[in-house]
Length: 173
Image 1 (cartoon, rainbow, N blue to C red):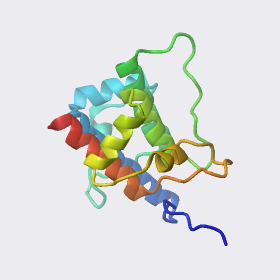
Image 2: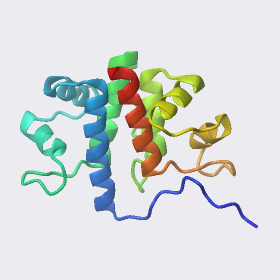
Image 3: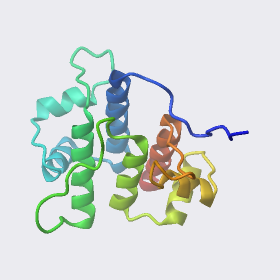
């Protein structure tokens, strides 16, 4: 009998994915205590120039008058800029986006954050625990496997939110 996928993502449309991207961006802004200027600089470092007015529309909660959905390319550029800012820019041409036609998944977001923050296994587990989500080492490692691997587990929206909450707790306290 096949085992149920404990961390399966909820089904949703591309629009839900973009709303999730906006939420991720807002949570990262809070966790890292970033100003508008800092965020614009990170977008630029990731290869996306934004105006302050465009940034403001990405940070508005869904249903707001000036809400604009954050695409996978925008969130990917922000995360790439965060990596470049915290770890130093790569020499040569920037790497191509590491997401496929299905978009930037939660696993890729988690991986980019792990790289940017230079977190090791213990740091990741501590961050999840601070976000009120206990994971074993095996569960954590399954999140970073390639999708074709039999031990791969998709990172759910709730699990990503737990990590971002834990990141805010660890960095802001």
